[in-house]
Image (cartoon, rainbow, N blue to C red):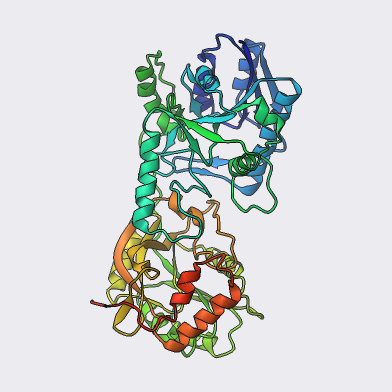
Length: 516
């Protein structure tokens, strides 16, 4: 049976990379396949697509919408919101075209891939409604290669029971099992995918789309496509028999030579002398540490102690005051009198919607053009050796975020450790390098939204043995206040864990002695 396939791609690509992409398309095995091509020429600075259309009668070119700047370099690709939905509109145009012209499949593929000749025939043979061929990418230099398919959420590669706590060890184990599964040739059901995807006419006709789901905050058109597909009871699959080569950076054209040799293909090394330097210039990243802190009615608690300690290792401070009714602002100004300080006081309290405050603080601090952002709450303090350690961390050029362990202190000398109080067993990011042009993504929930954007883990990070004390649970009156606050703001435990809320007032918690 001969299948009609529309292979389509939005193209805004460097000439040397696109030449390799088009070469791989010419080599696709199309026996018993009627293959047509459709490209959006999105303001490319060369004529490769035009030349390809002249050489092949089954090619259609569509002009791109008004030009936007798109930046990619030897570090990463810098996506902005308007570019995401521009690409989504191009892909939806291809869906409409495939439906109107009666194609059996739409093959959507990114223009920086070199696909193996067997790819298209193999994906068709799988008889899946939506299936992607898996490729692996170092999304940031000096990180491990990761796939463009995942389990759930923004880029989560492990399964977890909904609403149940999962520790770092379980996260690492689950992620490892998922990656190991994908390293074995096979076809696997996944939750999210993109970039090299075959879609059946059945799926196309059911109303799939890359357009934004208005009440979904996940970033990226592929996520909206996958969630819409799952809602339509369409299963998503990842295949690992014929992995493409991802030319994510121009420097990776060199590795393409070996990839071709392994496939038994002729190797004609591209001339990239003018675009990739043999000794690329590396800009030196700054080491200034800026403290970012959200405060409200902290004057009579731990604020003075926290700021005095922080003043030994920070270079600047940015503080958002959430309509304090005491002299919190005066304490901040007094203790930090010798340090550059940006301080804003909101006229009305917003603690019932934490995400708004966290994003406001983030915007305040990046407006100061920081090097490193150290985000602490007003009841968190590092060990005494913090000044020496943090200054050394800030000098490291290859790392963009550091994670630490946070110990919930239940009194001056002990921290709590039991089923629902194990924060200190997990490393969490507190110190982040500010990367201009990076698209930061937040967990958009009113409570427990996190103090740092979700996609920080796509940047290279490291674990630090320096420990943090969380003093906010040490007093009985503080524990009662927090218990009542959680019960008021999250009565159904939508954003947290009901059993943990109840355990706050446990009269006999398990305590462990803190040792310096």
